Image (cartoon, rainbow over all chains, first blue to last red; front, side, top):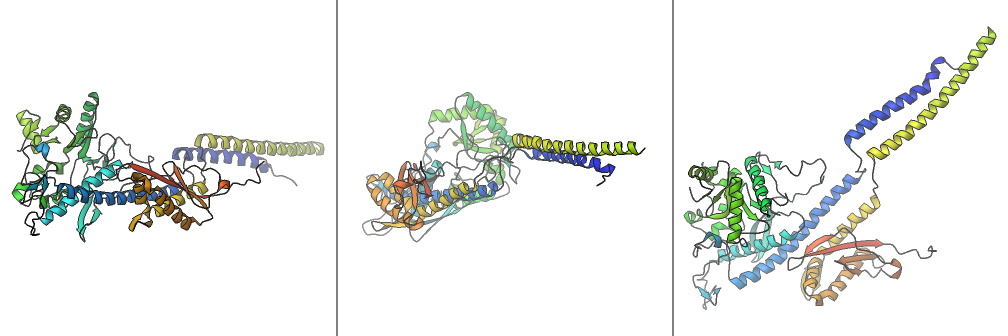
Length: 357
Length: 169
């Protein structure tokens, strides 16, 4: 068979084309990164995330069961408990927790009297028993959830009691689980931008308390990072337990649609305004600093308002004020910055701590 | 003239054969070189679908078992609660084992071997015998709360094949 002259170049041409194709393929694949994820692994990751959610739900269900049993026991022991007691309002703001609820019949050996001998309910308000039960239940549930290795949101349920002691909790926010884990995710150092333009740093270790929702305005977040550096210099760290709240969330607190149920605990509105920010009106953002994203509730590492000593609060104050925050006198864990009404008033006076303005 | 033509044709034929030979050699070399480059720079990883799906199946079975209701002394509770109860009251351990083995036998069949681990303690189905050998607990654990708030870690290793002792040397 006679070969044409052009056939001489056929094979070399094939080799050249092959080299070009392979080099291009190499460049394209190199840009996509190393193949650490084989085909099918992403699908398995999805299954695993589903399982993680199921595992967390089982943990929450079990925790809720034990919390209710414990809450009934504790309620019986203490004879009621609520965050704020209007009849025995403590003098010191430090004591604003777990003050016993009021019984018109007084106490007997330290326990509140619920009923008199005639069996008539003259002593207590039935509504406050329910709100006390929910309050103790919530505290117990949060203690369980705090122990779970993942970040299960705490204080995340709207409760209602049905059929006596059946508590139904409806989650306000869904569990958030990462499917992509670390890949294609913004750097863990940077907060995620919310639709309101605020920074969400929920789950950030050693800055946001486990299980808490942490959202702040960017200027406040930067100031908080500065505070964390100051805390590190003093051999400790600070944790945020509350930051930005939406207006709806503030309304829910005011209207008693949270486990604290302030509406039942303090039915008198003018008295309730002393403890809970009134969420209505045009000047709501000026009066309720949490709505601006420029107010935080912070504590030292792992501590709560129950376990913070006076020395701890002093240390916290020095850390936060040196970073530029202003403390609200009535709540030593509450700090504000960046143009809130209290912050501006404190700056005008040249102080780093201020009360009502 | 004819002689010269024949010589040229012979050369061309010889040249064509050489070109083909070197082209194929280069082709093979290019494939080998790029195989090496792809393997070592872009890489890949071992991925065993069988192992992955078994782990998921075990987790799902474990979740079902933990949610299964049993009757303990006229009190209805699920296995997760019974585990928590036996954790705080060791006298309930035999109760837990009996219920758990029954539930697992129902789930996997009495002839199959499955191991339920609570911490380092293993509870085996009746299908497990000497020839299933020793098996460790699965690494895919589920955390459940104890009454005192501590975390109890449980896992499941199911479908354990018997050892093939005959083929052993």
